[in-house]
Image (tube, rainbow, N blue to C red; front, side, top):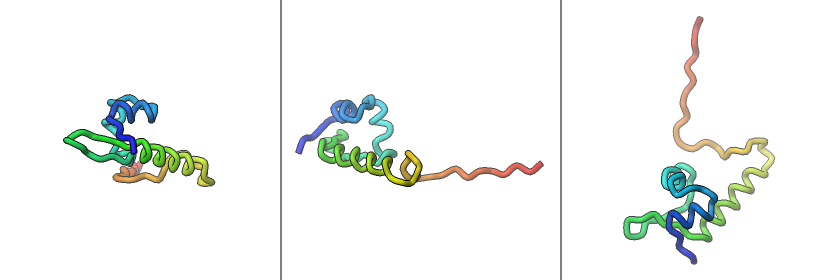
Length: 79
């Protein structure tokens, strides 16, 4: 098992450290804390990437995963 810090994980994923720091929870990236710092394992990141690739190549016709979290409701406008 290879443990990566935020900079190494960001490089592995092709993101900036700031983007990863701000989005890892929202994106569902597997992580853990060690000594108060965010850490990742190379193996878990590889599996996460593979799962995302399988989802995107699926037959759903959409390249985005199902929404998680809040969804804004649309307001209808009456004329």
